[in-house]
Amino acid sequence: HVQLVESGGGSVQAGGSLSVSCLASGSTHMSSFCMAWFRQTPENEREGVASFAQDGRTTYADDLKGRFTISQDNAKNTVYLQMNSLKPKDTAMYYCAASLGTHGSTCVAPFAGWGQGTQVTVS
Image 1 (cartoon, one colour):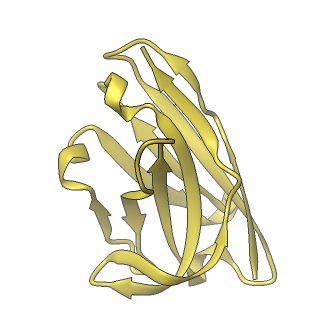
Image 2 (cartoon, helix red, strand yellow; image 1 turned 180 degrees about the vertical axis):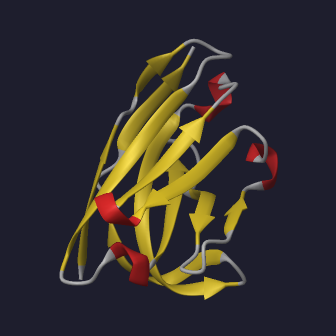
């Protein structure tokens, strides 16, 4: 069981950068999970952004490669998402998730926990 709390969202101009964080807590250490970031807008379904597998491999949505970077600090129980060259279409609620399953290095169901989300707005 894991609890996740995101932070760091906000508003930024197009072309700018923003970093969001996800603090994990609970009886199972974050390193036992595949950690992922998802995002969702009111108009669209939730989509995967990036994954950080237990072996350290990372994967990204095709259109985010080179702009977004996922990283993890096990000592701080925190996973990060650094977002650069942001575009208005990146505006969404960003969610952190802890997964018990992987497909390659992509986090897949079942999920052990989700955060409440943090809003990122790019104008």
